[in-house]
Length: 87
Image 1 (cartoon, rainbow, N blue to C red):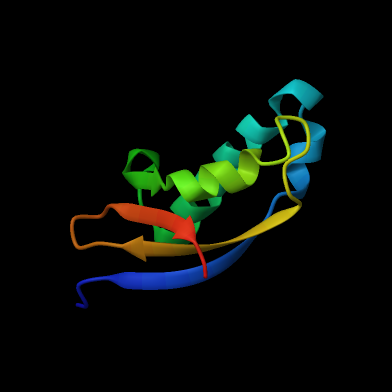
Image 2 (tube, one colour):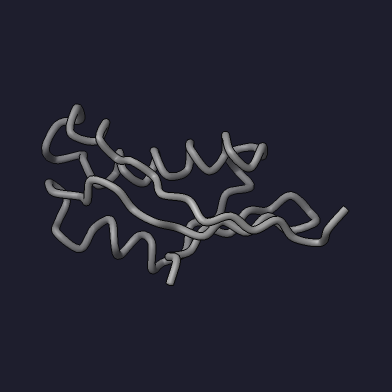
């Protein structure tokens, strides 16, 4: 098996609008973690979200996260998945 599996994903964040205004960016982070966990087949503890992704989700403040985000997910041999912004 290959050492690393790398995927570029466009993650829709429509469900964040269902959360209360003061928790939308938090909900967006949880959604990114959940979708990456499902697609890369790992447990939630093994998903590491880079600071650049976090800053992108929070750049318009807590109340107005983006509707979708494009990320690069890399799964390493030990099962850890690193999520960073796609270039």
